[in-house]
Length: 209
Image (cartoon, rainbow, N blue to C red):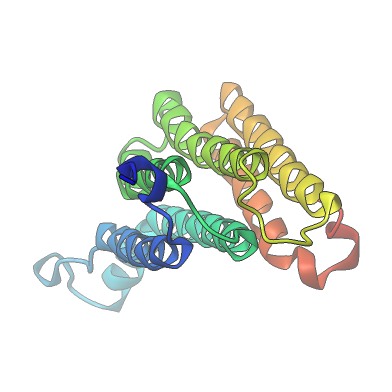
């Protein structure tokens, strides 16, 4: 009996996790390439060096924010993969689309750094985050509907996963809307959202978000 290729293609969640780790590692490394050491010939003393380092602060903050973004989404993806009994061709391509969005983060970060006062750059940066969230949400919904979750995964677990993504994306959207007032306020708000998701497991009143 002939087995159709699409039935067994992309069935390894472990291989998908391994690829994801590699893509995330490269994307997170590329972020730091936008931080450049001040040119030695332009410096004539300690004061000049300090001034040059202060000038790097906006890009350093963007680097930190994007690193946190990728870290948060890596944790989110790994959480899902740990609950999958197996993968299939469609789920694999959903996660390849997710990794495509991951690889865009260095670009959107550099764009934001070069045009930090421009609303368009902020919106593109936010759309990158939105794309990550939408695909991760679609991944869980598809896996649950296709019966790819591990046996015994509670319905409440699914609701918790979906709720976390929806709340996070709502907060990011609020941050993007703040660009109407100021892109600086937008970035500060998004940074606070990131810090919330990093610190929430350690600070009780933040765990609900």
